[in-house]
Length: 160
Image 1 (cartoon, one colour):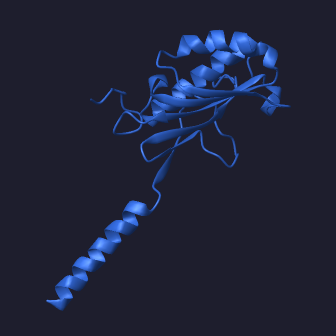
Image 2 (tube, rainbow, N blue to C red; image 1 turned 180 degrees about the vertical axis):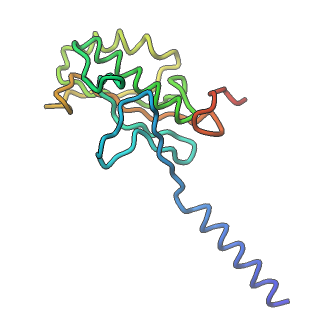
């Protein structure tokens, strides 16, 4: 009897430990710029959310930064969409975005392009001007999204 209670107690403790241990997995999309030797992931999935690293306007096919603010903004959002798709999410799953601008005078142009990639209800968002971005990009955006698919890479569908 005492042994049985001891076993049940051990199983319960193991379950609690497993439930509290962080489970995360990295995401890599072949359709977004590669993380070349840098100590970060394109995204991390944890607890039903995708935490996507900031993206700049790098063309994943050429590895070059695209020219012009509007083109960079559009490419950033395409790169984010690719990472989210590989994560089992989508632009519709984005709940928070942070936009980093090299020049706050580009805010209106960014907003116009940004609004073409998102539908209402729009994600919560912060926008800040920064001193400098990687590769002297003019914009970088990072997002947090809800994972909508059971497995990364599978088609995203709303679950109701």
